[in-house]
Length: 231
Image 1 (cartoon, rainbow, N blue to C red):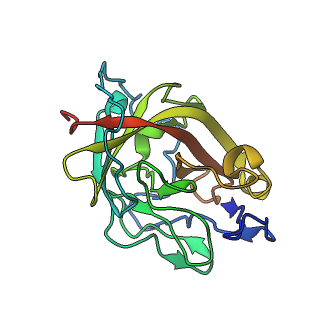
Image 2: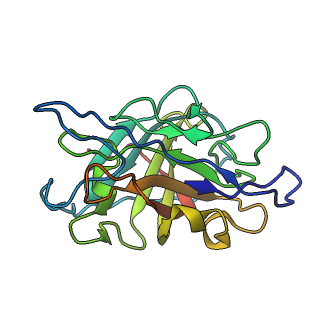
């Protein structure tokens, strides 16, 4: 994706390309892989009637490494890589299909998650065709629509949080072409965005030989704490 970057002082820098890398395997009988399901390659997502008991934080949970994530409405629970998302040729390159990764960098203001995170946090992950991937269910490529709804919860377990999970509520949804994403203040903001979380993947072209041209972003806002989800 074309990522908007801000200095730690909050001054906007030149747009820097931070594109999710499209992975493909082309061979006889092989599956085509990428950051989004191809049309008609997967069954429709079944939403789950899940209730999350969210409570106000009694004590602050310091910003720290995220370990695990869950989206109860989709029946999704997955690990988060121990290391930050690597970059390959300036592109976010999640190393595995079945886990998410977080993104922080010394020259970027993005924050690890916590109850008082000073700026937005970022989780990135793959979607794939023919094989399971962590963010497959966040977007239905067959109907060109998000599977999540406003108010759905994202739960994140962090090293500092122990058994208590940070809870974020879905607030905004963006399917943006990569060329325009870097200029989207709706996604990245004009300055620090405390308590905001982004989950990022891509919409794969229906032509398996074509590169992905659009990003899928869900914006979330910190809402409180909860116990571990029963997933």
